[in-house]
Amino acid sequence: GDGKGRIDFEHVSFSYEGGHGESVLKDITFSCLPGETVGIIGSTGSGKSSLVGLIPRFYDATKGTVRVDGVDVREVDPKLLREKMAIVPQKTVLFTGTVKENIRWGKDEATDEEMELAARMAQAHDFIERTPDGYQARVGQGGINFSGGQKQRLSIARALVRKPEILILDDSTSAVDVATETKIKEALREYAQGLTCLLIAQRITSVMDADKIVVLDQGELVGIGTHESLLKDCRVYQEIFQS
Ligand code: DUT
Image 1 (cartoon, protein in one colour):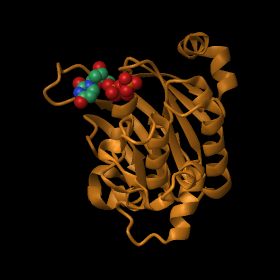
Image 2 (image 1 turned 45 degrees about the vertical axis):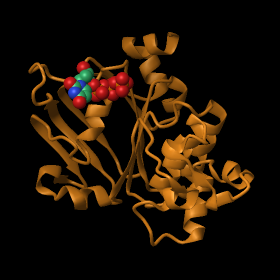
Image 3 (image 1 turned 120 degrees about the vertical axis):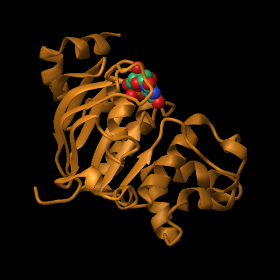
């Protein structure tokens, strides 16, 4: 397609500076086409977070090339690069302030309508409305007055209000129940068409309806394809499925 939000990994290897020199990612090649939802699955330490961290240039590849919209990310100012994307980290970061301030963080010009649509897509609108002060409710330090799953949904709303071309969810629905997670994915499909979405997950149910799934094992890409094809011919995927 000619849409924006294409990502290419070309023979990418990566090791952390000051690490043990060991490759955390080994010769990874795959593409996310504009508008695709790509799942990334693999056991803990397999390199999932490191892989997506190369896209906004939290780190740069040791070997190989990462491209966004065809351009080598090393040739792009990280600030400009990050304007195209929204990343929901594993650990949600909320600050003391209102729910509204937390969702609009980094996008102060967003209207109330835009904020509410983002919250609806993230399945956060209903629980926000149920609190006495709604969007004006105070978020305690570190978000202590919200559950883990609610905090994750607020972080997803914060990402969506930025209307990114690329959305990276790093295990951001781990504390959200499967039914609610499904609703989030359906809302994204309906309202955020054309959005390229990378979905890191531990649970197969989180990624099984993705356009394709990348399976990592100790830094190596050991499978890529749909749920059905991986169940047939990727041993690591079968093992995750059975566990
Ligand atoms: N690693 C470091 N330094 C870091 C982060 C990670 O050395 O700052 C190592 C730990 C691990 C490998 O890189 O051996 C891959 O870690 P990553 O966090 O990318 O793996 P993951 O698949 O995202 O693990 P998890 O599911 O536990 O988040």
